[in-house]
Length: 327
Image (cartoon, rainbow, N blue to C red):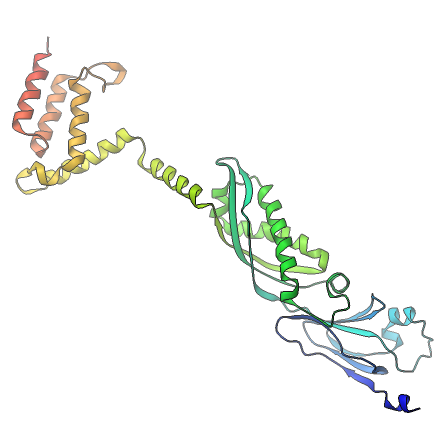
């Protein structure tokens, strides 16, 4: 008789969530739920009645009166009579459907992809994502179990592992070159979000956002690409040398008195050597292997003399040599 009188009947059930808390088991202990009790489920929450490990009735946001009419599955599992009016016991779990934002993801080990332009590459990627509980049943059975509560940090290592696997599949099986991937991270983020969302769905989770913030290559590979980019910008060495020589000659001509020493420098000397080698050594610089016109070469030498790139003595010497070749 004393035990019966000491029992506490629950007639109001609700839960106020805490940051980072995904699910809790409502603390019933030895108390029983009064038939006709009021269940309050706030926005962004779900409540589920679980009987012997099986998810029975699930309630969304709103105020619910607990009775056999709106507990059909639980009533059937517990074989309640239609005239049921007494208190009952059941495990009640609350689940937060709030979006868990600003979660970090990254590749602990480089992911190998086969790039059609650069060949096999090992890349690293980092970013942020957010998720929420979408389907209560698989989440309750596979992750929650009989725990009293479950927090984001409790499942995050498992999520990171699933994300890494999805990334390896998504990046490794793609045909888009790395340079295009790095240049369009919005499209890459959307593609990887789909792959990660499919992976997390097994636990009843939904990926609400997924962002790739960094996509990088190993340092030695990046240095190689930087060198290749520099060479493409410069072009072949011959064209680069001629450009440097022209720049130096222009700078020398702008100097007061046209002095060669201050304004010409190495670029003009290299240009002068190439100009002389093209026309004075037997003619490798003209198209089709023919020697260039000596008079044209004398004109170029005169331009170098005017710009201060060569001395009068050098000009006279080379001019005499060119004139001597005229038959």
